[in-house]
Length: 163
Image (cartoon, rainbow, N blue to C red; front, side):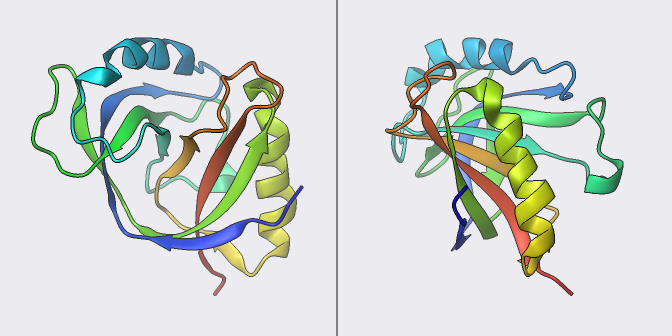
């Protein structure tokens, strides 16, 4: 697996819908099936890319994260400004900062292999540690759907220098 790009980004304004879930419950499919037919209602989109955002409790660490740990999951798009938020959707400001950006290639069912590489191999050997900010994926032009073997999505992991 490739080395990530380390990028620092400003905050991003998103509009979408959210749910509380766990890795074991994994209700991402129902979240996205609710969001996708309505995304056209959102004006001022920066690009057609989709954002899947995971917001974890500030008290959570990788050591005590389990498949039953609840977190907030968003299905959203980036907007230039918050003028109109469609009914039933919400605005979210994605915190800026430094991120390690990986590419996940293949089906979503194999994402655990990418996550294992990031958190089990790359992160411990790097000069970085996790920062307590949201994690997110960007599904852009190369995203061909969660079951397509050639699909690509960007995986953004919040990092800071090890202390």
